[in-house]
Length: 137
Image (tube, rainbow, N blue to C red):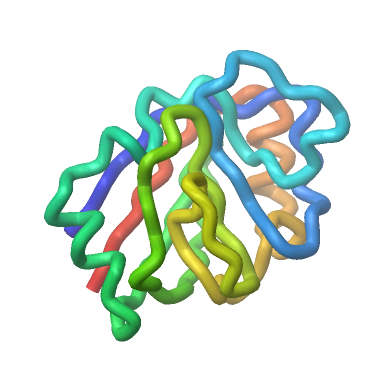
């Protein structure tokens, strides 16, 4: 099952955060937002299909997040968690830890914002359109 988010990069995308990555519906990004990869997302976790959410709440679920922008693609894999809420109406956050809040979409991710391909990050910093595909198996 997949959920797809359309968003765009921003000049302040740096992708330097060591434990999270984020896509937000906000229409701005300050330099402090070093985990944010894309803004103006057309959807948030609260919009996801209930069947998708239920599948992500399985401890054996593998959740894959693929971000495409400017001709570059990066995929990061993590796991589901029974405590995932998918209730946030603004932001979707991937985490390298097992911390869960209403923004969390994947735990134990292989890497955070700092691990994303630098060419992809550069494309996002140039404001490229982005497609974020979240898959669960």
